[in-house]
Amino acid sequence: MLCQICKNKDATIHLTEITDGMRSEMHICERCAAEQGIAVKSQIPINELLINLLAAQPNDDELADPAQQQIACPICGFTLEHFRKEGVLGCPNDYEVFAKSLQPLIERAHCGKTTHNGKLPSTMSQDTRKQIELLNLRQQLDTAVQNENYELAARLRDEISEREK
Amino acid sequence: MKLTDISGDINEWFDGSGPMSDIVISSRIRLARNLAGYKFLGRCSNTEKAEILKKLKDVLMSLDLGDKVSYISVDKAPALNRNFLVERHLISRHHAFGKGPRGVVLSQRESFTAMINEEDHLRIQVLKAGCQLSQCAKQINQIDDMIEQKVKYAFSPQFGYLTACPTNVGTGIRVSVMLHLPALKMTDQIEKFFNAAKDMSLAVRGLFGEGTEAASDLFQLSNQVTLGVSESQIVSEFENSIIPEVIEYENAARNHLLASDTRILDDKISRAMALLQNAHLISSQEALFLLSHLRLGINMHRHMGASTPAIKRLCTLCDNVKTKGAQGLSIATINRLFMLTLPAHLQLNHGETLEPAGRDALRAQIIREALNQDTPQ
Image (cartoon, rainbow over all chains, first blue to last red):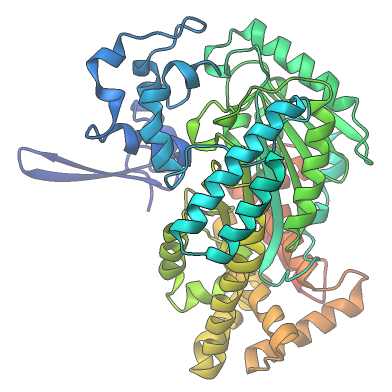
């Protein structure tokens, strides 16, 4: 199908407009759409989509809490309003400043998980590393018990007591 | 390195080799990292971005990766070159058309790339042919360790590696496989695959097509959960449960095509052969769509011993073309045609920009030459 405006290029954008109950359709190419000021976003990044979806649900989402809106990160000046609009945070410190507000969103994006359980920086001190690893093992133990995987739970318990020596 | 040094051929991880490559074309792992002591990119001025860029570029260029590395300044590159890098999966569209100082470091064999100043300060990725996720994981972990010796990453004990978007936080890992699933599409079961992926919190994206539509029946399957699970857990779930399951689905669909009415399969393969051998104008989307059917035919013959009338003709074609040149018509050739006929590849190899009609004619010519015995045309 050719573009209705330039009648030259293939129409790749199909608009349906309903005004006063009247339906009208328009088929145009990307260039003409841009000239008409119609923003075309063919691929919405999955992160952005997710953030938008999550931000649009105000129930357990404290992003909508007016008191939270007043807080700004002392380092980057970032607010929750920025996050709502941009879908990305301003600086690493925001994870701490907005921890409470981000928690439900992080939980939902990561299937209920809230604590890192992967690689640790090699530069981290042995002591901190040990503590984090213990925390992770305890979390895994909880999951194993919940899933009634007692064999794994027993192994984890042994490992925890071994490491606490 | 000049882009024209690499644009004439496909990259190593797209050559149709590697384990299970009839369905799993390639494996990729990327890690998202940010420098401690800097804001995320959305809040950075161009001066700060330039500083981050320089710092990371210097570190990356000094690493011993066992392969020559080059740097390309993405913000200064012409649009055609940027599109080329996207087509080749070396950078993301977001990186190609983003704002401010940014660049990419890539290894000669294109199995390693590092995007600097994409959504995060640093996104490193390792790509390999076929199903080789463990190997990708091992290599990227080593590279990440080497970088970490020279810079400090933003990290929190609770949230792990801190990323601009909370959906990547934790391990910052994205494990993906590129899959060729033509039989699932042909048997109208691709929606089932999408739903199964959704249930397992995995993301599916069409490749090479426009938007999410996969014109070539190539799909990218990747993890979405990055927090609370370790890198090795994610990789092992892909290798031990997700990928075998997808392969089983696709093979079941291929068997179904053979067991039920082979006319559907033969019709698709014969049409693809006829059109690709004879067309004088062909769009990128149509070429991808048809090449996918040839790829299916060759693989069904090779891996399942399928021998329907159309597959037999396709094999005769493969043999005949093979006698002509060293390369012959093989999966590698089909993959070459997939990639080298994409718009930016065509234009870069042609040496000048072409209007869509010119591209369609050149694309048709390249395909005709590869699929016909009596060339040139």
